[in-house]
Image (tube, rainbow, N blue to C red; front, side, top):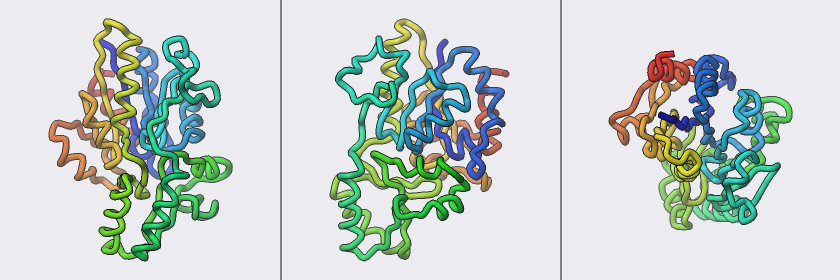
Length: 274
């Protein structure tokens, strides 16, 4: 049996505050040893995600960025992909799913002005504010802002003012989802669509191998991915609670007792008796 592991990062594999992942190292090593692909499906940018792939030694696996806005396949798979018809970046084969933020941002500005809703996007935060909110420092702060498909934002207005504002954005063909720290505005795509593209690739790549999917997440933006996989896992938040939206939508779901990264490790110890 072959397993594909689809995983969110912040609050799922990475500690929500410190971005530490060493508590999952035991399971990561087991999965790598057995050649079970560990595939990041994250809200992070391309540059952020690359850093964590390199840190964890997962450079041979595809990944999806910005809540599924684009999927990247490493160069090692180029003989199995028709990359000449897709946009490439840094030697990756890139499959674009999302609408570019250059088309989204004007619509967000227009709607916020019309409904007098005070919106602060990720581009409006200073580096100092980011360091405080995200507990990040140095060059990584700039990488967070290098977004292409998904605009994180916060509402500075009263939450009760958002209903008509959100309706307007949806009328533009956009989607709003709630992440761990921000609302996310994007085109009509999600993490589940990205996971499906990668799954179909591996199903063809492995030919007749049995292929089973495991997915791990902690927030509402992970719901489409968790619905797609055969074994969905909901990681407990650091605050001690679970996403009620995900629990309501997926009845048969594994719940970890611990938050990230130990919760991520915990589920594989149980599934594979590590």
